[in-house]
Length: 245
Ligand code: ADP
View 1 (cartoon, helix red, strand yellow):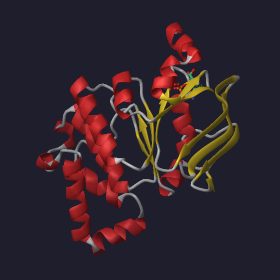
View 2 (cartoon, rainbow, N blue to C red):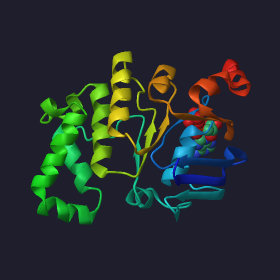
View 3 (tube, rainbow, N blue to C red):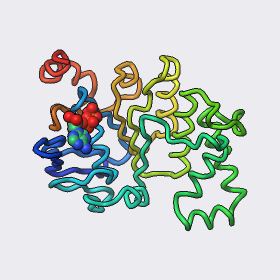
């Protein structure tokens, strides 16, 4: 595999006396889809918060696309191209599906905003393309509040696509979904984020099997194991941690 898009070196964050992430060395290659597994409290969300700048490390480094990003604010990491989808969809309920995608384009950057007005037709095509990709073209004029839970999640994936991030972080993208919606989300992720750099935090093992490439397992804020899912499932340390759950 090619160059690294993300690397953490000795990454540590301490809350009071408690290390939620402890001396973590972790990396993701360009164009790779990486799944992060780990029992509740393993530090998965904290790691995503550190990468996006929501939480600042106590020590250690985070390198992204040749930038040192440790200590940056979320708007700075977003500007550098790190896009995150949260567990609960962050969509604007009082806007239509189409308007949500438009806002994702325009809100990204002032320069982008200028581009939006100059090349409105191009952007319109891209919005339409995104709407068909996420399967919401027929609902473009519907208020986001009136979408199903699954559709709201897909809309947020569409909003991420509009921002064209270089590193995509999906935090439990199937949370609260039915099995059918979960499967559809897996297909969507495999299609729209093909050849992109993606980190997915997920619990649902059927979904992990569907999308999986390399899996990293965290436990108590530390690196526990890494490899293809089939190997990870046979790993004695991993089995022990999950049996204790
Ligand atoms: P996961 O996402 O793997 O379930 P988290 O990253 O949410 O785990 O949490 C890891 C540990 O860090 C948990 O024990 C949690 O209680 C603790 N933690 C997370 N954020 C904070 C915080 N802001 N202050 C104190 N403890 C925290």
